Structures are given as C-alpha cells and as structure tokens.
Image 1 (tube, rainbow, N blue to C red):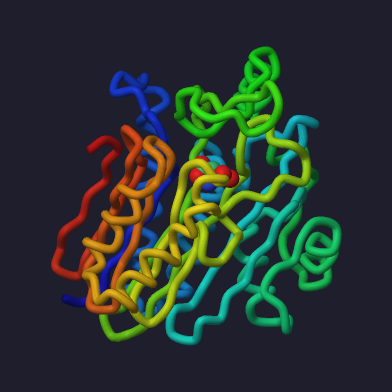
Image 2 (cartoon, rainbow, N blue to C red; image 1 turned 45 degrees about the vertical axis):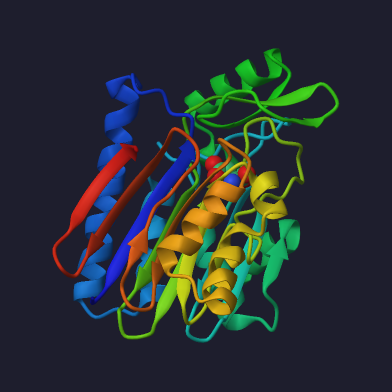
Length: 314
Ligand code: ASP
C-alpha cells in the first residue's frame, strides 16, 4: 500500500457550530503540517524524522495545545511534555515539565538518541536541553492571551479542563473535568510501507492541571507507541488513556490476537470510557485509522495512493 501519514490536533466534544475563527486556523495548521510531512516523505526521510518534523510544525502553530499555545497549569505556568518512538528499533524518548524548550518533541528525540534513558523531566530535562543546544525561549513566549483567559475561566469554575470536553469525571476533590478549551494536543504517525514506523505526540496537558501533573502523552504505551506492526498517537483525557494503556493495547491486539489495525483500534476506542479518547494509527503495510469516541478530533492524513483529507467530526 505504500507510505501513510496521519496527524491529530486533539480530540474532544467539539461543537459542530465551532466558530470559523477557531476552526479555520486549526484546519490550516493541519493542512500545512500535513504538506510538510508529505514533502519530507517524498524527500526520502525516514518515518522518525518525518514524525518529528510534523510535530515541530504543530508545536509552532499557536492554535494547538503544544509548544507555543500550550495550556496553563493552576499556577499560570506552562509545563510541556512529548514523546517519540521508532517502531523498527523500539528506541523511544520522552520529556515532561518543560517551561522553555521551543520544540519538546525534538528534546524527546535527543533523549532517545543521546542518553541511556527514555524519560527526562522538569529542571534536569531543561538543563539537558540547554546542554544539547536546543532552542529555548523565555517562559512567557509560550503563554498566549487565549490561554490566560481559559485558565481564568477554569479557575472560576474550579475545573480542570480537557480540550473540547464536557464535564465528566471528578479527578480530585471538588474539581471536575470540563471543556471549552480550544487547544489540542498534537501527534503524528508515519509508516514508509517498507517496515519502518514512528509515532510522536506533544502537549501542554490540561487547563488548570496541578503543577507537576504528567499525562498520557509522554508515557510510552499510553499516549505514544510504535513497534514493527503499528505506530499510535492518542489524545483525550490523559488519566483515561493511561488507565487503558491505549496505544500499547492497539499494538498488543495486533500482536497477540492477530487483529487488523482497524479492528484493534476500534476495539480499544470502544472499550475506553465514552467521550475520552481519540487516536491515529498506521500499520507496517500502509493502512491507517483515526477513530475517536468523542464528538470530534482535529485530524489529517495522506497516503502514497493520493488520498488526502483534513477533518474534524465523524
Ligand atoms: N491527553 C492530553 C493530556 O491529558 C490532553 C489532550 O490530548 O488534549 O495531557
């Protein structure tokens, strides 16, 4: 089937009457990033390079909840996290608690390639980014006026907000998950159709999250996973995705039950609590799926066969 690429810009209960001024910038961010990915594939870059490159574009697009545009913690700060995984070698890298690194996904890649470890967090990850010469900025660079307002609303309502999601679950004390947030976690999965696959995911997490909270995105097997069969990037309520080991479950169903990518992904999405999860996934043979059990997921995909689409709702 050849190569295939899919990307997402966050799942949630996205209202069908989402105002155009909030819809169009995200659609153009997805289209732009997809085009960057297609160009990179056509230039012969391996999937891991393509996935990193695409996620960097999405991190730099302030309408998504990753990199610049990340949502704010309860303290009014940004704590970004990301993970990347190469399906062929199963090498992976992850980072959390970043306050100044312009492209968290690239730091995750450096952790993967230049350390004996998989996951670095907070001040040590920041120091490592500087040591490795990654681009950094003052923390204020990442804070957009929209996210300051979003945090204010979340605090007034005493809520921890998930992107685009209605109130569902109490996660601590009086705080409940609520949506109205506009940002979206970003991710990209790529297969070259020749046995190489990669997954990459990056996020600012949840609006009004506790400082120090770590979500599913950087947890290998939860929000991000790739092996020789498939590559998966998830989005939605991090706590539900971690409990469900969503990304690894897709791979495990293929590996141990012999399910197709489509059947495995649909099973995992149906099993997850309603309105909590979306994912994008590709398989080694070039098939691709983008299921979600929320009302929508900002997403885009393309295949070597010429199929290309950007969409939000079912
Ligand atoms: N999964 C992310 C988190 O919980 C949020 C999202 O996907 O929008 O941190």
